[in-house]
Length: 271
Image (cartoon, rainbow, N blue to C red; front, side):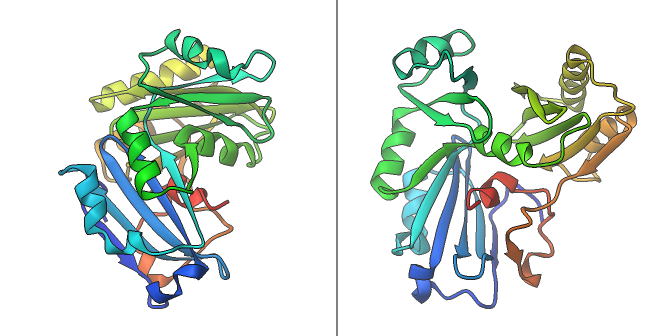
């Protein structure tokens, strides 16, 4: 199944009339909209859809009748928006905008997430149009940045040895690295070519003193074994492999054609 196209998967057990037993998870970006529905009684992912942004996002949402159901709960993650990590000891909500402006241009809305098991907040910024859209269509939804979900999930893995996680979405590479179970790096890079992707990966490893012969690297997102991005990374990084789905969730056979490492942050919102 290719990402970037309108993909839809529905399990045989899915029944929208049981929406009170379902949790709706949404991932939203300027060029990205995907969602899935999980049965909260069984932890079974029963519906999934990935939609390209080729129209006004409001029109896209309005056409999705399923999204108008009354779910038990709803969660939204914001994908590929500018963000920065700030230690709790210096974090102040009133100065969040100034801290973001050190690293990036900011939109109208500034938000922050407290990270689990890490003494830091993630500050991020989204356009007012995106903020209003969420409040209009998904009023009571829990909200998090994609980066928050990635860090919180990767932190739960065994990172005693050096580990790096590469997440690729809409030509944006996010690198998250750990050493001795401590987060040592999290940053995102825009890239256009496979050479850009390799450069940012190797440059980050060099700055972090991560040996490409020994560091264990897991890949997630819009990358497959057959594409040029993977082939080039594989040439230069010895221990590289694709990640897997969250183990807490169940996927029926209808999902077999969806690679396990794709849409990881969407599925992980339920955890």
